[in-house]
Length: 84
View 1 (tube, rainbow, N blue to C red):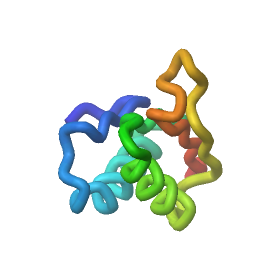
View 2: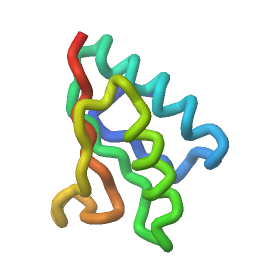
View 3: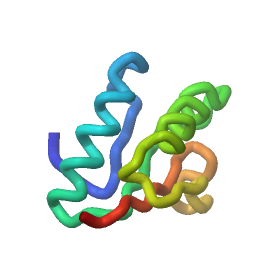
View 4: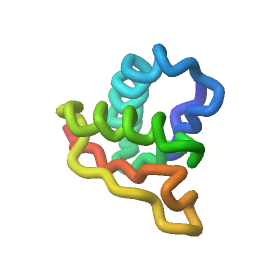
């Protein structure tokens, strides 16, 4: 999987997401990528709540917020990662 500033979760199983986020964020930091847009989709908001709950507990995460409308709106979350 290429390490980019966008991670689309649509192709992943919900049970894989906690480990995926940790591994992906570690790879991003190693590549010098500190802003990541996570695309979780709109739906009923279940995946969004789960993802944001994981982000609150992740020590690599400096901050996060809903993406602006042109970047997915509430179907995506912008994450700022801490530098090394």
